[in-house]
Amino acid sequence: MIARPGSGPLRRLVVLRHAKSARPEGVADHDRPLAGRGRRDAPAAGRALAQSDRLPDLALSSTALRARQTWELASAQWGTPPPVHYDARLYAAGVPDLLEAVREVPADIETLLLVGHNPGLEELVLALAGDALDDTLDRVRAKYPTSAIAVLDWHGATWRALAPGAALLTAMTVPRGVPR
Image (cartoon, rainbow, N blue to C red; front, side, top):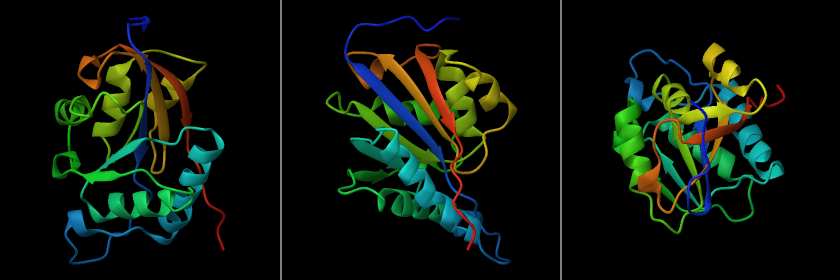
């Protein structure tokens, strides 16, 4: 299916998978913190978004510790971070729950950042992308690693209008921080 221009303003959904997490013994999955590599990669993701002029107007993040820490470290790279809403539905969410949360975003938001987990984020990107620039769709299908950023552009009057196959996948990057 090819993404076709819709009516309404250009909207951008930026999908950021949380950075690499640690697996401390005896810690519940929801409470796992970022690993050292994740603490390096999350700021690199924030810098990559700033350099590509893809800063969000609003962020939605999973309530899991590793997602919250990813948001905090990434957004600290920007002058004034946008508001963030932590949503428990985004933890371990599949496409229906992720899409429901996105569709609730106010119409005045043009660029939305979604911070969460796989496999849900990868499946969401693949579901929404009706087409892609270059080989980005193949790259998402091959692997959507920690700290991966996918950018989906589409036209719509409201976020409620976002539908499977309606977006163009314009970028997929995996920023990595420099080890110390």
